[in-house]
Image (cartoon, rainbow, N blue to C red; front, side, top):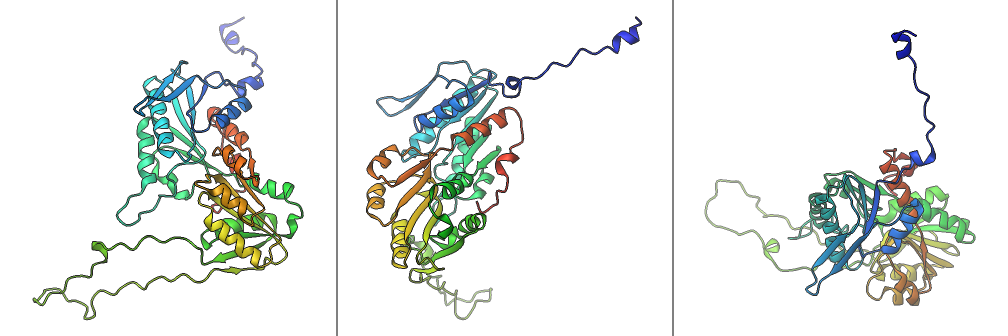
Length: 375
């Protein structure tokens, strides 16, 4: 056989098994103390063992991280969500990420179902944009990718210098409405304030239901403090080179909120309020009382993140709300014991699929099918 002919012989192609497509030998999942149950559920769905990582606090409240398994050259996925103990959650995440970075991990992906400080994404008075500061800290710690869910504002992704995948929980909530709310065709999607109207309209269009908006939300405004910004400009009798307006600098007209009203018909129908976060429930309770006064027969509240701070379970239990449905991005088992109306939807399968696709360098487009900016 000639050399040319011998060189043309190709070895048979090896059949790729399912294990080749979803190789998990170099995946390591670790977690802090914020939500170990969710981390175990994700690891179980992926068929891998949760990595050995101990996170504890010394007597002086310093955070200590000990990683028992080797992470050299591996893809690390740190599952750490935000809870009511947000500051400790953040420090645990940063220290775990930096520990993996200094241990020569190939990539470090932060899986943060609920991003803390996401509501502080706008400049207010003499404060700062805390979510941007947090993004800078995460990038500096060594994180190379972020997986999160339903950011309070989509523009927060621009604060990061690394890729951010903002997953959506709306398919799970829509499925719950269709399968678990009896006679949901007689429902109306309610936005508890005009700021949630776009999200509520997206749900209404998908379910082909009506829409109602509560106008004049009961929200505490920023306290009117007497500081330098409210002092009038100085008046001077000396001659100036610049031309001034005779009436001086015009004042802003005081914003007066209208009385709480409902735009839309909810009489005799099931009212479903949708939002991204339930924390302080006073606004939800006030909206539910108004819906009840206007004839709503049942009231549901659906949200992605159930932080439920302070005495939220007691307020919800005493309110006219019939059911509160949230996902398990934040642990709330104690709150469920205090209020039987709270129901939980498991989203661990979505996080596990996102991790699998990122690890196998597959497209994430499948997880964002039919997703709009309003979701």
